Length: 90
Image (cartoon, rainbow, N blue to C red; front, side, top):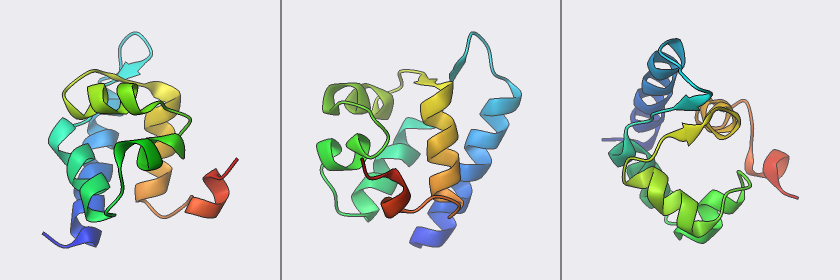
């Protein structure tokens, strides 16, 4: 699957999950989060740090833990191309 198609699939999944939001947490398809990170050829630490997330929390998101709404929003904006790596640098 191409990186652009994968990003669109993840964005659609996040949008669908946003509609079903409960308790301030969103569930993203863990395999899609992992695929996105791997497609970028980045470690968990490097990928997740751009969203203010530790490596260990990122690992949990990639295995099914619900993603907090603020992180999910940043992810959605990132995969839709509305935020770049430069926008997310501290």
